[in-house]
Length: 298
Length: 177
Image (cartoon, rainbow over all chains, first blue to last red; front, side):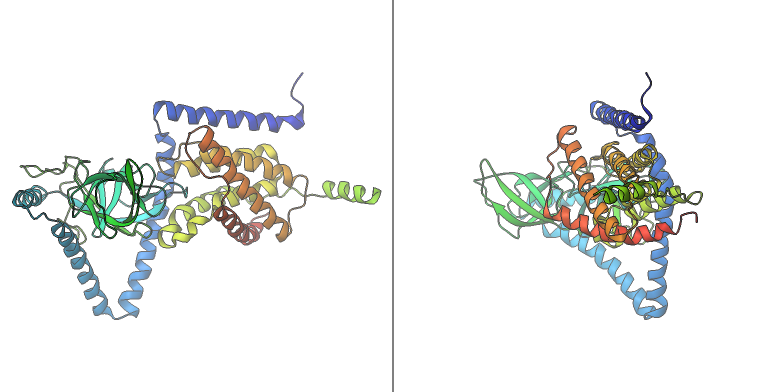
C-alpha cells in the first residue's frame, strides 16, 4: 500500500508546500520574521557584499585619484562633503517658522539635537525581492545601530532601521508600502503622515479636502514619529487629486532613494522631539559616532 | 504518425541527466544571491533580474529529478526570502521556487531543453508562472493587494529569458564531461 514511486515527488511537493504555508501562517500569527534564518543568511552573504563594496570603492578611488586629477578630485570630495553638511543645515533653516515661538522651538530643537550622534554608513546591498524596498548597510549592532533608528542623507529622509545584525543593518526605505514618517507641509504646517506606496512616489495620506496644498510645496518631518527631528526634508508635492474626505497628494522623495550609496544613521532611540536636555548617545555608540568625516551634526 | 511517436519515445529515452562538479550548485546558488542583492546598489535596473530563479530553472532542467529540483527550489527561495525586507515572510519565494523547481525538473525529464530557443521559452514561461504564484500567495495567504499580469511583468520575463540563455551557457561549463 506504499506510495507509487512516480507519485513520491508529488507527495514531497505537497508536503514541502504545506510546510511553508504553515511557516507563513506562524509568522503572520506571531508577527515573527524567522530571525534565525535571516541572521544566518545575512551573516553568510554580507562579508561578500562588504568586500564587493570596498572593491568598487577602491576602483573608483584609484580612478579618481590617480587617473584623474589627484588634487582636484580630493578637493572636490571635501567640498562635496561640506556642501552636504551645509545643505542639511540650510534645508532645516529654510523651513523655520515666521512666528517667534516657532523660531524659539527651532532653536530649542537645534540645541537639543546638538549632541545627537550620527554615523555615516555605506550601502552594500538591496532587497532580494523587488517588491520590498530595503537596503543593507555596512554597519550594525557593533557600531551602535539599533532597530527603529532613523536614516537620512543630506538631501532628506531615507527610512528607518528595521533589523540590526552584528555587522550589518537593514533599512526600510520610505518608498516601501509598510513605511511611513510623521510629516507636514513646510508652508502651511499642515501635518499628515507620509507613507510609501511601493512606487517611486510617496503618498501624503490625510490632508482634508478643504485644506490648500500646492504642487511644488516642500514636505518636511514633523517630529511626531519620535524617530526623525523636525524640519528634515521629506520631499516635494508633485501631484494632487481631489477626493473625499482626504486629498490624494503624491510626494517625490527629497533623497534619491533609487541610488543610495552612503547614508547617515541617527544613533539614538531617545525621542527626538523638542527636549530641554541634549539626547545622550547609546553607551556603545558614544565613542564611535561623529568622528568620521562624513558624519554630520545638524 | 507511427514514426512520430517512435521518435518521441526515442527522444525521451535519450535525454541525459547532467552531473556537475562538486560544489557547483552551492557556488552558483550563493553567487546568484550575492549578485541579486549587491549589483542593484550600483545598477538599479539590475533588480529586474531574478538570478536565483534562473539558477533554480537551470538545475531543475539539467538534473531532471523532481524531488531534488523542488528541494533545491525551496532552499533557494527561503534564502531569497531571508535576504528580503520585513514585508517578505519566509516562504513567499520558497513556495514559488519549490513549484518552479518541481516543474522545471519534471519538464526537463520529458523534453530536451538544450537548445537556446527552448531555454528562452522555458525561462519566460517559468518567470510568469513564478510571479503568478507569488501574487497568489500574497493575495490568498497574506491578504496583500498585488497586481496579476502586467506589461512590465512580460517585459521582465523577456529580459530574464535573454539573460538566462547566457547564464545557462556559462553554467553548462560546470557540467562533468
